[in-house]
Amino acid sequence: MKNADLVSIAKQNGAPIYVYDADKIAFQYNRLTSAFKGVKNLKINYAVKALSNLSILSFMKKIGASIDTVSIQEVQLGLKAGFDPSQIIFTPNGVSLEEIEKVIELGAQINIDNLSVLEQIGTKYGNKIPICVRINPHIMAGGNANISVGHIDSKFGISIHQLPHLLRIVKNTNLNINGVHMHTGSDILDIDIFLQAAEVLFDIAKNFDSLEFIDFGSGFKVPYTETDIETDIEELGQKLTTRFNEFCKKYGKDLTLAFEPGKYLVSEAGYFVTKVNVIKQTTSTIFAQVDSGFNHFIRPMFYNSYHKIKNISNPNGKERFYSVVGYICETDTFASNRKISEITEGDLLAFSNAGGYCQTMASNYNSRYRPTEVLFYNNKAHVIRQRETFEDIVKNQVLLDFNNL
Ligand SMILES: *Cc1c(COP(=O)(O)O)cnc(C)c1O
Image (cartoon, rainbow, N blue to C red; front, side, top):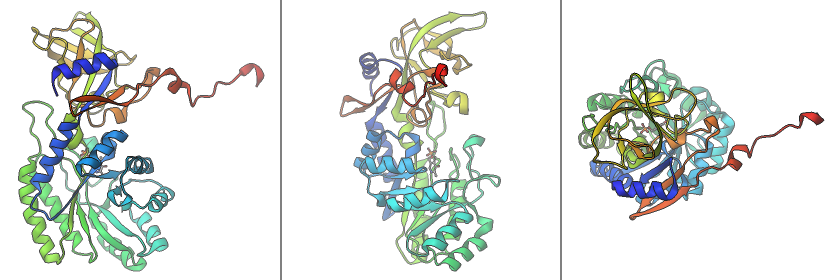
């Protein structure tokens, strides 16, 4: 979408605001499915936690995606957005058995990531419902330590070293294992390491004779800057397709190959637009202070992520160096020593790669409202979430009357 579109959307709806470009989401989806066109049955389960707005989910459904969920609330959002339970996989970590049973009642595909719950589900349901198991192949896909989930000390998945115990539980309780799954975390840069993890999963898969799908999770890295290396989806598509089809032949059945990308589909489609309140010159830098903070956009502070920042009010101005910070009463640095075209108070700054894990991680810290969300679809802006109001801030609070207690 164009600079001018962002400016007019922010002017019309006010800042701060999240804006998502539907075309970019569709582009990413098509790029992924094209890379795997050699696979007979492909299923893309969009990871709802990246961006969970109902209209985004509905758009995902329209372009052909299914969804991956990690809480019963996400399952409910998916159902509300129009997904059939058969299009929903539930991949929780450490949630209660009660929650899993409620999701079973809703009809979603269950993916279990620990032996304790697996044994309890097996004992209660036997082969009445198909179950997928999440395996931890203990292969590190790289990236920030907080988002790597494949390492030996990770809380995610059933360790490959527990395979004998896993198989015993399946046999003892007559479980119907219809899928095996892995998700090694974000930021896959080395395709060969990913393929090594896939080999581990194929090795596990051989042990089950009623499989319907193999889910390779996600972790596709998207570029944040022009020089960033991204996951080479086309290379991955070529190599994994060959290997997957080989496996299916040996297995004797055309299985479904599933992925569950979050960031890959939505990250680059999103812009977070803020307004500059104050330009503050100090002894060491010039601060541009925007009308937001890590309450709305936590990734730079939380993951040390780099987001391009563009002064969309003055895109061709002379470039200067700024520290872009927020307005909350805590250090909330979005960028330090960043070259941006000259900023005047009142200008609009657009942060890139704001589609994934931005709005869904937003809070009311400093009692601020969570921003408006807009979907740019068919060259038109559609508000898909209203900005909060003071009513939202107080609606669940109870004001005690201390004179009468
Ligand atoms: C978070 C998550 C994803 C999505 O990860 P991205 O890096 O956003 O693609 C996929 N699968 C599971 C199980 C997850 O927890």
